[in-house]
Amino acid sequence: MIDLIPQFGNVIYTIGAFIVALSVIVAVHEYGHYIVGRWCGIKADVFSLGFGPVLWSRPDKHGTVWQIAALPFGGYVKFMGDADAASTGTDDKFDGMDDETRRQTMHGAPLWARVATVAAGPVFNFILSMLIFGAILFFRGVAADPLTIDELRPVPGAAQTLQPGDEILSIAGRKTPLVEDLGDFIDDLPQEASMTYELRRDGQIIDVTASHPYPAYVSGLTPGSAAMEAGIEEGDFILSVDGEPVPTFQALREKIGASDGKTVLLAVWRDGEVTDVALKPRTMDLPRQDGSFETRYLIGITGGLLFSPKTETPGLYRVASYGVSQTIYIVRSSLSGLYHMAAGAISSCNLRGPLGIAQTSGEAASQGWTSFIWFIAVLSTAVGLLNLFPIPVLDGGHLVFFAYEAISGKPPNERALRILMSIGLAMLLTLMVFALTNDFICP
Image (cartoon, helix red, strand yellow):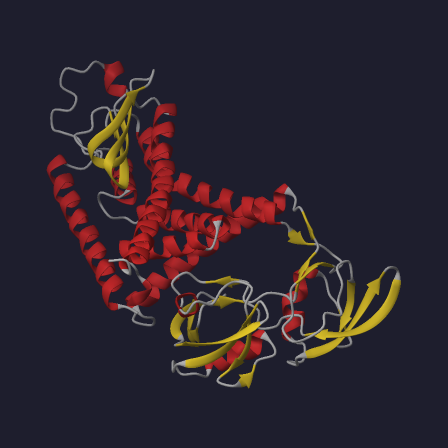
């Protein structure tokens, strides 16, 4: 029983992180429906966070009952005239209503108001993602030109010759470019353990020998990855793979890529001590810039520079642009991934269900607030995108019905609408069962 306590604690932590992440995303999504509906003159009877028995409720001055329910795995807004939380109507929904009251219902509102109200949920999810991505960039800052050392990382087995405040003029005889071009510059450097740096220090130009600027340093971990499960932590250095030294992160990546999925033995340096860690690389389908995918063996670590560069606070335009571009990238990658899964080009294990998402949320939370909030932004984008799919019962299905109404001049038949809703619910449940199955059978 004592041995089970840590496992039980991890389960509670994972479930708690999942509930927090999902509650934030659902609350923002449903609030989008609610507030835009109110702006459009549609009255909301109930705003519920969760389903099932009501734990707490309170009416506001607009007549909307705000409530928290016992099952915290979703939520809904029930507008006036709705028969249920899915905003379906009834055949007699307008019986006994005057024109003013009818205008306040979802089904009696003008088409433009209904479209705006339904679309607002996914749009608010995208806005949440953009705000989070932009805020993280704003508070973290961006590396400033010229490239200047702000803080040094401890280097295994070598005296540190670089100093905070050093301006790096060149590395291995190559002039240091602008920070935005630093990635390609580092990739083109010799893959050697040490090299010559030309520095400006206290107004003087000096040369020193130091480690490669992009060593096999662990700056981040992918939730659920082989590295995280093996106990590798941020701040570790990977010294060798199967006894062969890896002086750079690129060398590490090449060794892992050539492993063919066989178990590898890593020598990991942490706080002056070296530990051997055995783990098995996993295949991952990674998106390319052109929208295609490549399958590679990975252990799930992110590299980082030998030092923390001096940063500056980005302007609002750059922050906003980053938030928008990051959200668009996730949408494009998700759609491309679904297409390639349907075509059989990549594994269907890339689609995970609630258990996989819950596990990822717990692991993201264990890495700190920044990682967890970033995960919420990614998941918010995914929820917004999923809700735009043209499946009845989802927001995208409602928008399709509205498009039909705009073209034909009349709403779909109520009986046909109920049949389509049932089909949509069956499709959604099938997708959920498939994703849940992946949670159990996929590595």
